[in-house]
Each structure stands twice: as C-alpha cells, then as structure tokens.
Image 1 (spheres, rainbow, N blue to C red):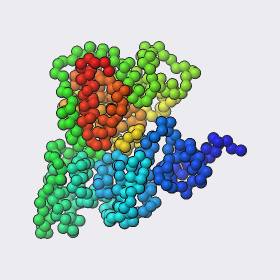
Image 2: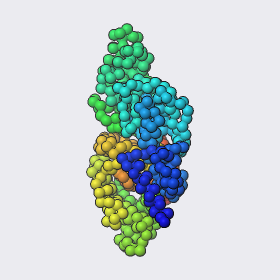
Image 3: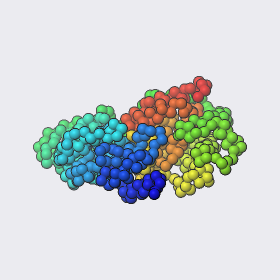
Image 4: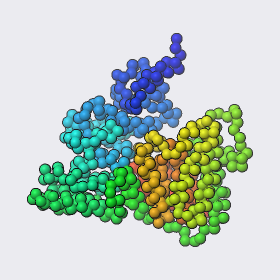
Length: 512
C-alpha cells in the first residue's frame, strides 16, 4: 500500500503535468476529487472561486497573498478565455495601464463582453472581477498581451473617460507618447463626429508637446465642418521633455514618474548639507556602522542573524560547521555575502566622495555588489552559479504586494534609463529617494534587490553629503508600506518623509 508521501507525489505529478507550458488556472474537472483534496491539504493548490484553483506553495506564515498576486494576470486571462472565448476585452482604462507597463494588481478588474453578467465575481484578498455587458472594439482595435485582450492604445485613448488623464497622469502620458501620427487617432473621430473627444485628445497631445499630432487632429476635424475646442484633460502642465520619437512605453513611464515625483521629494527631504565632507572620518563612521547596518538590512529581508555572527564574519573568525542546519547555513552565507558586498560598496563610496558622479559609479559597480552578495551562497551550493549572470531572465514578485515589477525584457531597457536619470539629476535629495525607490521598483535581480537598493541609497547619501543611514528592522512595516504607496498610488511623499526622518536622526546623533 502506498504511503501518504507516495500518494501526494502521485497527485503532484498530475498537477505538474497540468501546469506545463505556464498554465495558471486549474479547473475542478482537470483533477479527480482525490488528487484535488490531497493537493489542497498539502497547500499546493489554492481555491480562487468555486471550481477554479491556482498552484501555490505551502505557506508557513498563513494568510499569504503572494501566490495569488503571482498568478493573478495569468489566471484572469485563462478564466476569461474559458468563460467568454474571444468575446471579451479589458476596459480601456486597464488596457492603457498595461500598455504603459503598469502591471499593478487592481482591486477590481473591469471586463467588457457582449455576454457580461454585470455581476461581481469575488476573488481572493478582496480583489474582484466585473464582467460588464457592453460593446468592445473590433479585433483590428485590439491587441493581446500575455493572453489578455486589451484595446489598442489609439482605441483606448478615445474610449477612456476624462478622469483617467487626471488620476493616471504618468500612464496616460506614457501611452500618448506612443502615438506617432494623428492618422492613428482620426478615423473613428471623423466617422463619428466625436468633437468633444477630439478636443480632449488634441489638448492631451499639446500637453506633452506633441504639437503636430494636436494640430492635425484639430485641422482634420475642422476640414469636415466640426467645431472643435482644445481641452487639456490633465490637471497640471507638463514641463519635462520626452524623446522626439517614441521609445518603449515603460521607458517613457519611468522618465515621467521621475519628473512627476521629484518635486514632492524636494519638498519633503532636507537639502544637502553645505559643509565639506571629511572623507577619512566619513569612511570610518561607515565602517563603524557595519554590524548594525548588516543586522538590520538582513533582518528586513527575513534572515535570522545575530550581531555576534556578523561580527565574527567581519573578523574572519567564523567557519561553516559541518553539523549546521540548512537554514542556519543560508543565514550565515547571507551574512558573509553582505560583508563581502559591503567592502565592495566602500570602494564605490570612496569614488563618490572623491567627486565622481554617483550615477555612473552606481551603474559600473552595482553588478559587483550583487555578485559579492551571493558569492558565498554559490560556493556553498545554496545558489546556482548561473544566478550570478546578472539581471533576471524571468518574473519576480514582492511578497504580499499588489505591485508587479516589470517583465524581464523591460528590465534591459529600464536599467540604462534609470542610471541616466541618476547621472543627469542635479538634486541630491532626489538622487537619494528616487535612486532607492526606482531600483527596488524595477527589481532587476531575482534576489537581493532590497539590500542593493539600500546600498545604492547610501551611496547617494554620501554623494550629497548626508550621513550613512540604517533602516531599522523594527520599522520594516512602515518602510514597506511607504514603498508600496509609491508603487501603487504613485505617492512618494511617505517614503520621502520616512527617509528624511532617518537622516535627521543620524545628523542629530540619535542611535538607530
């Protein structure tokens, strides 16, 4: 007779066969009752709604939302295709968000279909799906992103409400910048005589300084006898400069987000000190902070380390114990990697204190920080050597966050843009806050993004004459919430205030 573990292995084999090819949504009919109950009991299957499941991992903490957020977009694509076939499309607003590179999990996903029920479908963690019975664009005005049927950019810009331009200014501008000619927008406006929408879009294109597109919309509508008045739907003037030719939407979105947030940072973060830096004294203070810094930064990431262990590794008085448990070895290797990375960061720090632009220094050196961070884990066989190759080649998710980092293909475009923005930025406080936030927002590596992001933040602190700052693990919740607010809502003020408070505490001599 098969043991319980053998029975579970049989059920797991069935599940793995179902999930081959990246399948996310599992229906009741795909599994026998016996297999389904075993997998649910083992925490390898999670019910989304009656008759529908997703694959998951056992969660010792309980109440973990990450498995759902990881599966969200794939599940919705598969569920909607099963329910409606090709007779559906996401709302124009959600279509623009996705095409701008904003993959944040919405609280409510609105779907248009001629077979929509107009009834809410409850999903895990207070997310909902609303299939609205409504017309949606013909196939020539649709595109498919990762299995999700969405409006084309032009069709969505025509269909969205005016509120979208005010509530999602960065995403709206990022997608507007993809339109190269008024001819992409004009046919339906002319055919339907949509003068109000034409005036709104002409105003929107004028706002982002795409004057030719704006003028061509007005002239074409007037030529056929329509009276069109320009109406800027945005709530503020656009002062940044976008590239003359369209770049990828996620790149435009990053540039726009930086420009949009920088004034809030400046308003809520102390100006850079105007006194000269005593470089030897600064370097000594950083070295003296190491044990505290390592303890808190590693603890924030969930590693269980002691200050004693960190100090022993720093003094090279620690060696792996043959009898040590896997978990303890993983924690120790993380601490050893942090020490090696910290030493490499100090070399970058010296370059910045000597007057080099911190943007290029960070671009040139952060890969070395990453490799040092995980080199001991590779030597111990905990991490694969291939994982040190560089930026990630697959999706990554942030635990318990509705924010979804950009796809791996986008990372290759975003990182050079990010470092260019750092190099071009003239305000020290913006380099600190936006440098940290944007790095962890992009999440370029499979692991270690928080630690490297804090190294980067402190490199920018040094460049501006601010002290090296330690984020206490006791304030992890406040810290993560501030990052979440910046990522989900686009409000960087809480993060700016949080980091500014730490800087003020260090400057006043308070112990973290």
